[in-house]
Image (cartoon, rainbow, N blue to C red; front, side):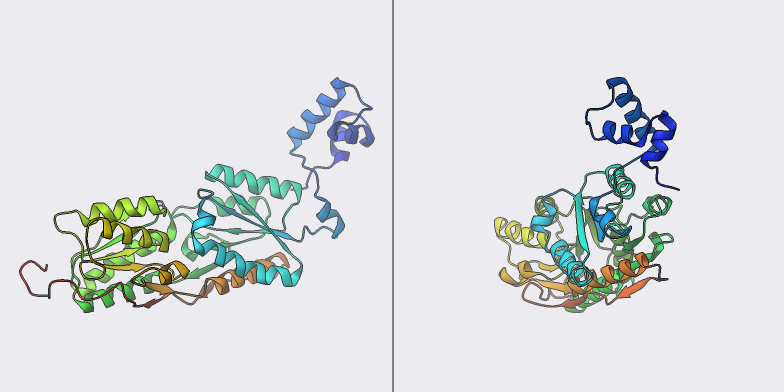
Length: 346
């Protein structure tokens, strides 16, 4: 769809382009009635001002966008995003591209940001993050003719190229390790159930528990925050048959669980083993050091940026499978307090 111009507005209003410029920039030279009519037509046509950067670079904004639909405090406390962004920036800076970052609270807010960025020519492409199990953003972005890559499982990215890591393999590795140690009561404190990667982990967890011949793990879905992680851990640890091992879907929640265990006078790993998803400085500075899954998140960001720039350049880009997160055992995991085969160990 052709982007509306000042000439289109002038033709529709029956005035000169100079008059349109005066009206839209709130400058003297037109009557109040004419100004109001011009602004109304501009709104109806979906006109947006072109950014200065776009004008100076021959039609390119030399910027890409990332919208994060999570609480604003997420960036300050969750290392994943900062490491991902550092990898993105390492590629963008080499190509003189900037990154526009926006935090929103709802999907409609997110789509409105994309519409505004597209209409104003502020970005040349976007990263689509936190894919949902039934995600409708792909078609909406396509309709805007906005180049994009999806960060998440390819089965939910629609026609967009996806950059993804096989979370199912990571889950299998963790559970097989814990089962080998003798754990039969495993729980997981997960992220939001509607996220595609959460659903992948949920399914893999149920499958590997069956394969290992142990009861299906209890799963508690949260919002990834430390408060919710602590609340979920507390509920699990005061249950009549508490788990002997808990897997947390991010490092913040796993660290919060250490405080809960201390509050309940429980030993880690003596009474309960703890595993964190995505190793970070946080998982290594606490005591005991947390067993975690480890991957190069900065490289993940760099691959995403490289793919997006290729899409912007008009190249054909397929789905890109990054290496999966490998399990790294440390001081927070050990055999359960009761050996397998004891009557109360099941």
